Length: 459
Image 1: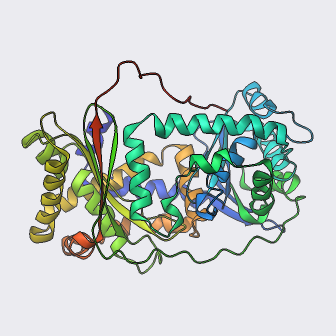
Image 2 (image 1 turned 90 degrees about the vertical axis):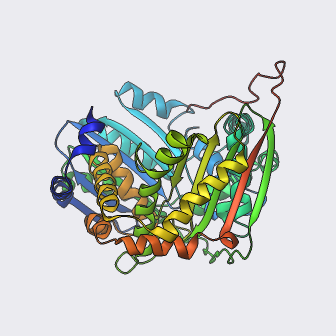
Image 3 (image 1 turned 135 degrees about the vertical axis):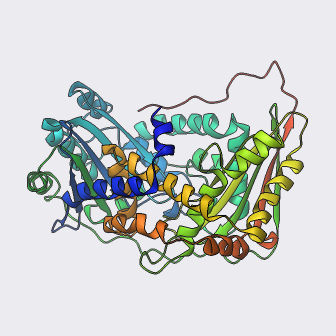
């Protein structure tokens, strides 16, 4: 029901909502401790809860060949205790306080978070500051956890045909840039990883001057700053390794990869190199690409679903996506889908390219453009209703090298995109020499081989 209301709101109402949401963001305050830790606080007094997140500017982007997956492995090890907190105790202490916690590793960062009743914020700060500097990373605990990570890789990738395709797609579209490596790591690297590798990663990157603390909730900014100084302010910074420029060479010809795996249906994943956001004030193409993604797949009546799923029925599902925020300053525009029974991956690929060609030759209508802008902005407005999402927005921007302050210009930037600019980016980037295609070639499913190879992991 809420989704229906969201779709029927007028653009003027949506813009009003968006700017009222941004008025709350006026409560955002940022500070920097003497040791380099950045602290960003957004007051949101609607409920007596608080979200606390620590973002380390260290992800698979910073790894080297032979040690892929070490950022994710270290994330696991961060729950294995310090000199004061025994292994596994971190999660139990948060649970005993009525809170929720977890962590995730991505290409650009590693993030740890807790959601608690507001009076429990000191506990979160104390525990995070402790493991930022005092992790007890033993070979014994590492030997146990690396097996868990390998199980997780089997579960995430080797048991899932589409995940296999995605992994091969990334390593094909990126020949040089670290975004071509899986965040979970290559299995051979995991098999040969040591506790010393994890300790080296921790020593290199886990420091207050390589982290951002984001706190959103029913708090007072000055009180949060006081807590941050109390728990994090005593930690010492250290020199970080030099980050070498890593640029993907221009693609000069179509690339293809076929993955054979047991599956019921084929699957096709297509992508084009496109720019990520570089200059938040001057860039135009990233915003046009975001609108284009909405034109293609912003809602159930968008072009891909309407034309390929409902009308021609060449696909059972289709998608299009683009993310402009990347610390590595590279991005891709992807289209993917599953052919309907009796249809082939090749037929779906042709159909997807035909939809792209329609935009390149005919553009988009003003009515379509207005609808997509309304939907994209509305999605952002309603997501900001979540304290966790607000913190995620701030943390992602800050870790990628941008300021949270660019959030206030986001609706206006989308509003400024013209139909001509949407057509222009389609013409500029969506060509065969810039195309990479990965296809799943389904193999017969062995009824005697249906047991998953891996297991999911929960801290």
